[in-house]
Length: 169
Image 1 (cartoon, rainbow, N blue to C red):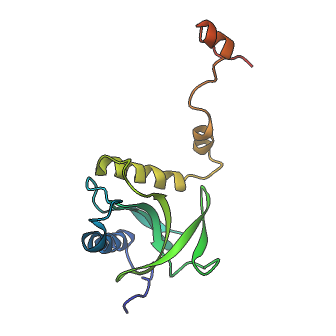
Image 2 (cartoon, rainbow, N blue to C red; image 1 turned 180 degrees about the vertical axis):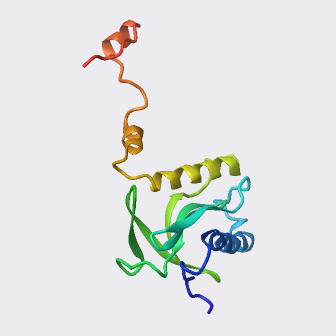
Image 3 (cartoon, helix red, strand yellow; image 1 turned 45 degrees about the horizontal axis):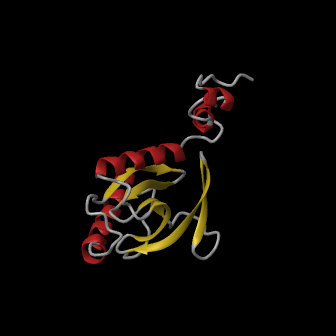
């Protein structure tokens, strides 16, 4: 049945991600390669596809975007073109669209265009880190630690005097 979303319970998550990547490779070759948003240093890759809450979730990296994606068939729409999905890190909004032989998908843009990535290794590492963050509960110790400032605040007067003493509470 062409255009129908896959049954997430019947299809392997990695296989679905690879099918989606194949569709984006075709789109890239046919319609995107000559556009100014196309980063020639990148390819198409399905990163981290897995089962999540009865559906499939992963990140699609292309030379023109990086999106969190999932089949839209199992999800409830919140309006005609968007839906809200709750993840351990919180709720995010997805946009619905059609992709070739895959059918309707839901996607949330992370990057577009992709010029800040020099190569696929950098893009893939960013995709893996983004997916890990998405699956990290908002109130977990790790999430709280990551929200803390990376450095201890420096006392301004000491900084200006050249002593760089840390502020004491």
